[in-house]
Image (cartoon, rainbow, N blue to C red; front, side):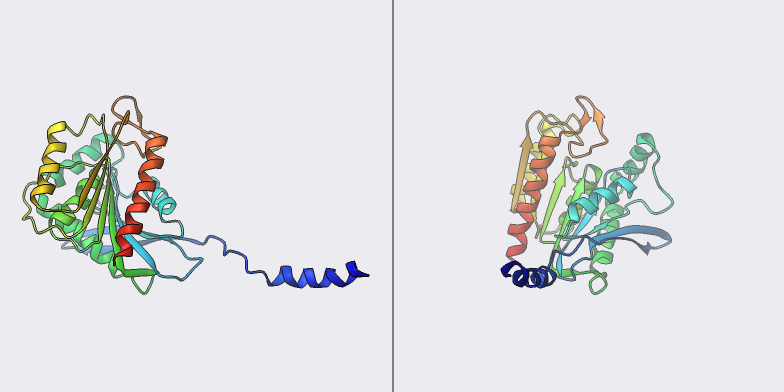
Length: 265
């Protein structure tokens, strides 16, 4: 008798339990122009919740806005962030290999003004998506990988209005041709201690620059770690090699960093 009485109640209770909403990933192309050059970035976020959340501008590695970059952005975004993957080259430049990527990146390394203009425009385009995507404009940050690390550092060197920036195995030296502005953003540079592409002099130069600019900065060196340590597709031993342990630690540091930075906004 008791069993017959409880069964309908349990059924009703189960039906009224509010289950977590299923993931609803969004990935959409956002087109924009700088002069006569056409660009296409990618906006990614989880649409299961309409709650506003921080937005991160992501500058990808020297291969540009690839499917691998979009997948990485989606994984980082989860239900915590909206991410806009910047297009630093324009749609006419899509490197197919490292030689082409090196040539494309070299062009922008040689033109600091263009690099700064492009990353600044990408930030502007991302912010303009507020209202269309669940972006909290009071919580804006940027992240960059390898070449993209240089991009986001140039953003803050030129006075970019972001609360914080994280670079992963990025170039740390200033790009010639840009006029520096006071650095407003907090900076976290995540660096492989054995990265053969970033010299000790470059690291020392970055540290001096940050001190001279009175920036709020941290540089973390990961032992036994080389370049591209967060890239699962990178496997050049001793040069550019995925390190899952360092990658996991780095992404955790990134999340803790942005939690702190955005709490102050």
